[in-house]
Length: 98
Length: 371
Image 1: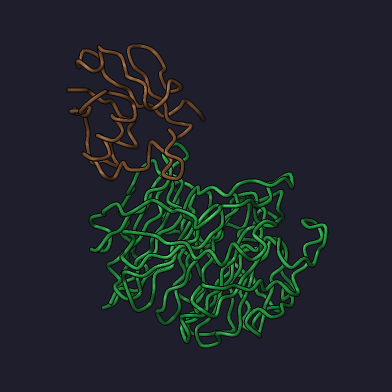
Image 2: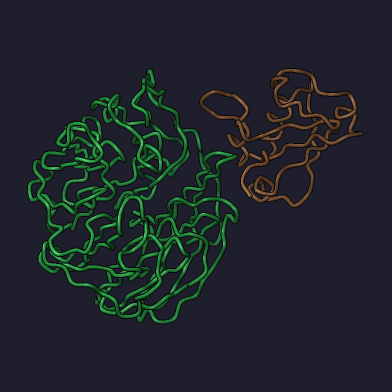
């Protein structure tokens, strides 16, 4: 079970108040996590990836095990500690504005 | 007894304001979708409890919300707005070609007869429609074929912000785009013609009378006179009496002819309202006095409406979709400001009351009469 931490705006959009537990089949990548997240919470569809390009939105960041893995690609396996549930997968709105 | 519902979109959520027919005591509900920008909310004339909301966020893109119970509960709809065919390019701010890319919905225009049919005006400028209540969207690409490569963004982006449907002939549509101009379709949006003859933009365009490229801020029509359209352009208030074939200026005695919204009285087709703003560089009222101007003569002769509005030290703006009228008698007129005030008049604009004073910056106001 992977634990995903969402920013407040997406928690309210999904109608949840806490972190999300996700079962992700196959190789666990940021893209697979987003797929599973959208399947479980359809209102989130299109909020993390641009529907036109399939790319991560530029103000969305992925953090794992204390590292920013946003630029490693949607198809690159994430750290084992996140896969095993020992560490959460953070989806973060980029720091911008005041 | 009928009720009036105001759908207020702001920079940080939506609010629903309701009052009875006297319109002197308002209940405020919200924020809905807190923290998200609500560019526009509009109810279906065919089913007043069917509401559509354009919810967006600079980080997380576009969300489309729909309510079937007057705003008590909401459901997310399809948020994929895919342009048809090769996206091509429009002009960027610096005049270079720039690929079309969807950013957000600026305006929803629901059908008067079918609660599941609506148009959506989007940025980068294009017109979409849905026949299933927002579950899917299809572009009407004929619009972008009208010299789209020469369109350019206004200060708020390159947005299709105004959709006017002729109630006597729903196949007859008008849209306005910043900064491309006004366009007309007589075949339900399949083909389009630019209708900008008479618009003059000497400070914005190398050819001031160009066929496309004008920064039209808003257009309004009264259903009883469908060939007459009123326009607030970047500068100039304009009017056409031939469905947009030619426009003439009706700014008359306004203290400034810059502004954003323009609306027509519900029962008097020649009564028009604007809110003059000092300039494109100074987005606040002239002299720090918030004044709605009303013309009973279809323009040129304007009177200032000031009772109940701040007449000193007022430096707010009123955005293009942030003014609306209801269909009650007397006509209710409403507008919201970037300072978070929502003002209401239940007497044709003669006097005003602040319904709210401290909302987030108001982006849109739509009035509904609930039977």
